Structure formats: C-alpha cells, structure tokens
Length: 393
Image 1 (cartoon, rainbow, N blue to C red):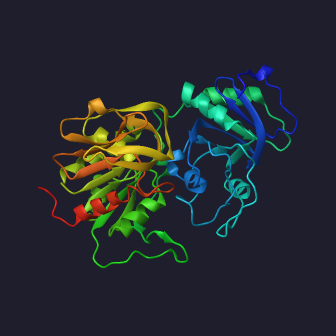
Image 2 (cartoon, rainbow, N blue to C red):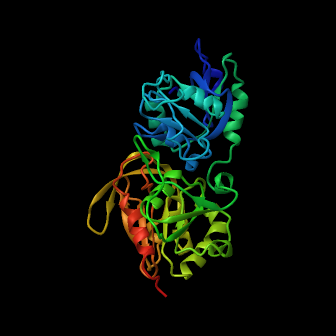
Image 3 (tube, rainbow, N blue to C red):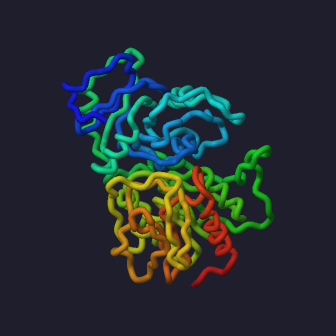
C-alpha cells in the first residue's frame, strides 16, 4: 500500500473504488456492492470462510473489514448463514474480485447482496500490505468509497476519515440491539433440515441481554437445553426479573465496553446479587469484568479471526477459537474474587474469567463458532447444566 498524500496519489485507469486513511494513505481498487462511501475503523480478519457471518456480526458495527484470505465471495450468500437481520460491518476490502458463486446452497452473489444491503466493497487491494500496516500502526480510521464513474473527492474523503471520532468512548450497543424483548425459537442448522426446533420438555429459562448478539448464540443455548428470552441492551433489572429467569446471558456486541457499561454495569451487578448463574461472551465478558471492578482498554490492533489459540488455565488445554474484539480486560485489574480461566496464546491477553463467590463466568471469544471451530461449544452445556441446580444464596 503506497505511502502517499492525496496530491501524490494518481488514480489508475479503471479504478472505481478507493480507500482513504486518516493518515493520508490512499489505495485505489475496484468497487462492488453499494455505491457511496462509509467511514469507520479499518481492521483485518483472518478467517478463510464465513464472510457472510462476519459481515452480519453486530460486533463489527462501525468497522470496515479487510479480509486476509484472497478469495472472498466464491461460495456466494444464502439466507441461512446470517448472524443478524442485516450486515453491520460498514464494508469489506478484498484482494480478488468476487467471482460467480460455486456452492449448491448459494441463492445470490456477494456483490448483489452487498448492494441490496447498502454495504460497500473494494477489490484489487494489496490486503497483505494493508494488514501489515494495521499490525505496525494499529487499526486506523478510514473511508471506503465506490463510484462506477471513478470520480472521487479525495479531500472530502480525507476530511471524513480524520473527523471520525473512533471507537474509543463510543457506545454502539444501543444502535444494534433489538428494541423489544421476545422469545427465541429454533436450534442449530443441519444439512437437509435447516434450523429445526430445539427438542426437549421442561427447560431452564435464560434471559439473554442483547448488546449486539449473533443468532447462533441463541441457537446453541437452545441446543444445550435452555429456554431463551432476549431483552434489549437497555432493559432494566426489574424488566429482566419480571421474566422469571433461572440465569442470565450477556451477549457480544460492538463499541467501547466502558461506554456501554454506564447503563449495563449497574444491572449486571444486580444480576450477580441474585446468585443465579451468569454467562457472558466478548462484550458481555468485558461488562462482567467492569461490574466486579476491573478495567478494560483499547487494543492496538484487536483480535479478529477464526483461528485464535486460547489456553485453558485449569488443565493447559488449547482451544482454537473465533474472536472479534478491539478492547480487552486488563488482567492486573481483576479483583481477588475473579479468577482468570483462559489466556490468548497470540499475545497473552486475558480471554476468560470466573467469579469464586458467584456462579458467573465469561470468555472473550465467540464459542458459538459462527464462523469458526467448535472447540468451545462445551461452554453452553456447562452454563445450562448450572441452571438445573439451585442457585447459591
């Protein structure tokens, strides 16, 4: 990726898309999907598959995703492999132009799907160079733009990139959460059957707080044997308890946990006082840490991929996990009643905790495997099993 300023970045013939970073770096390419421009944080994701799940993950709100795998779009899209009702990532940056889909499950090509959902794509970019730039300099603010005419106001795009405030201090959970509470029906997807109904009779009741949740989280809770009700991020403790839960789930989500914690942490503290089991992932993990007095911090480049090794402290086992987070819990800030349970083997950062005086635990990664490996599905069974026992006083 060239180190250039707008006045020294000539547009090559045929360029219909551009990436403009707040630093002044410019990369020209070929636009696809929707026309227009989007401003946000530019990050990278190392998954080789699951781009549809990634684009629809609400945790990616406010972000433009650089895919390190060069062939994105080759299996098309379908109505099943989504983790929310619409894409939440602002756009994608890829090496090769998306090809016609080659998969029996595809119902649409990637470019058409992106256009229908007003998301911008940029192909023809040296994604390895961009990834190296992010690793060396941190995740930058930037604008991705697409114009079939090839006409761009670079000065305006640069002004947009430099004027965007960044994710630190930004509460995005309110933007992506559901507006009302409701029940969840359906288990995991199976080839030839789709999303069938979860089986079983009497089920412990989980109230899940939606800070930007993925559908497959609820599917796995149901598959593990729970009845699931979902409430908005801003639900009060009284509203949650009116549903008569046996336990609580704190979902993933985007933005700065400290900002979301302004209204979420007091509710979580009241949850903990009930003695009922609690399980959190990703943003939910960070919010649980904040609720017990720990701190979170913005990461330099974040963790985003489907191949992140995590060590389980109790027995040394290594789980390959799916991660998507730009903030982390500060290990040294954990109180005496919070025990670290998992550690990232990429950089040694905290990846899980449990409370010693409450039935509460959480992990930094996404154990529902959408996309990613299934090494951590046992956590859903662990949580639902805890719901079947009397809570501690």
